[in-house]
Image (tube, rainbow, N blue to C red):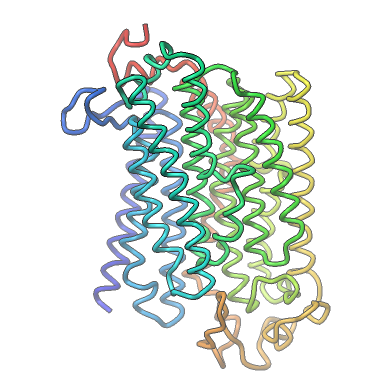
Length: 512
């Protein structure tokens, strides 16, 4: 027991200190500009560099805040289950390794080190996804491993080809040297990187693996995967498009990909009854909005995409955490078996409603502000394809609202007796939330560990607390929209200009 308590203390303290340092970096980034650290004292392009600018600093802060909330939630879940060793001892070190891989990917200025960052986080994610060793998790883990290995192999082959063509893999150095490479060769390298990162980001049609993989994992694991892993792929796509291959050569292709990702993803969500699987499809759909801003390739569009990434990491993660609470309180996350949760647990209703409306883009939430910025950028571009993309974005937002309203009406609003196959835990509960029978705890498998306990106790503060904090962070993105949009626009300007990044790594005048 002392060992597990020590693990909890070390992991939570480590992430808290990390978050504090990253907040300091973010606050200093606008005034201090882009900074590079040369690992081992080796000068680029011979050594590995870590680079922090406004975009990477923002991603670090948001990812660490989300990671800390999920860690506290997971720890609270294990403690409230009466399992002092829960989550299992391997969870804490593996979770910290995952966060380290994500942070490395956001900071690295070297393509091979980016590959290493991906492999670190993917190796940790394999372990986290298969915790418990159940058959569905193993099957999903196999699919996830195969797809990830294919993506990693494509990335590694692309790195080898880039090194063969330029003699360097330092991104700042590549930004200069790729301009001298034959345009046809550039296009091949460009597309190989985008395909590799597109698989990791789950853009259509490379997103087939995600809805079958994420929902089978434990609720905290699914939450952190949904919030962070695909965004690392998006981050890599943004760096490739703005730093290595600037210009609009494939913008039309990216617009088509963004449109299909948004529309196909949300249509998939409409067909789901399982809330985790439904949210996995909305995750795919809203990756399309980030590609939307990248495809527009203007300061306004890219700035809106940066803001939307921060919004989506926070809101999507909070929705998955709420879904874990729904499983705990209602016995299942299948809408065919749910009903009456708004009466049984008003707090749970509020915790779902706020991020759901935020994801749907209802004013004045941050989702609306991010989408409005993207739409303004698309209209300003004024091309026929841009207008089609704007229309697709509006349609996707409306369908997202329909999906969220469907979850609300079926799981929260209707009577449990009206459910197609009502869960006994709900039928055994009075309108005031008290239990007239026994209850059980279900997280994918019926463990029966909570037989005889009042279901009201199944929403402990150690789990609702971090969920409330994450929902509040999503709301804070609305209240802080002014400075955050300023930071996002400045970050977009830095990335499109490229000179601050290149000179921070290679020295003054290197971009000339």
